[in-house]
Length: 81
Image 1 (cartoon, rainbow, N blue to C red):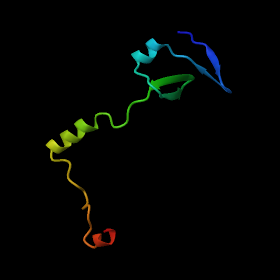
Image 2 (cartoon, rainbow, N blue to C red; image 1 turned 180 degrees about the horizontal axis):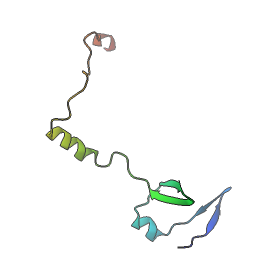
Image 3 (tube, rainbow, N blue to C red; image 1 turned 180 degrees about the vertical axis):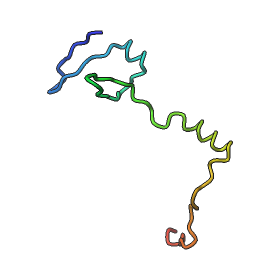
Image 4 (cartoon, rainbow, N blue to C red; image 1 turned 135 degrees about the vertical axis):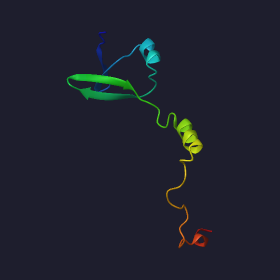
């Protein structure tokens, strides 16, 4: 597919059709990958996608225990009150 490089302010860019944007679920950001003479545009994934399922699975496997205590023995919590 050929696309034109167009002026955008002091820079240049390309336009992507609505069809491409919808097909590849591109909203406001893409990841730009430079690889072996190619420029690859990849839809930016949403961070933390699927974390809820992973946390639920960890809980079911009892793999969500704290590795260290969240309150230390010598910690004085009264100074924060």
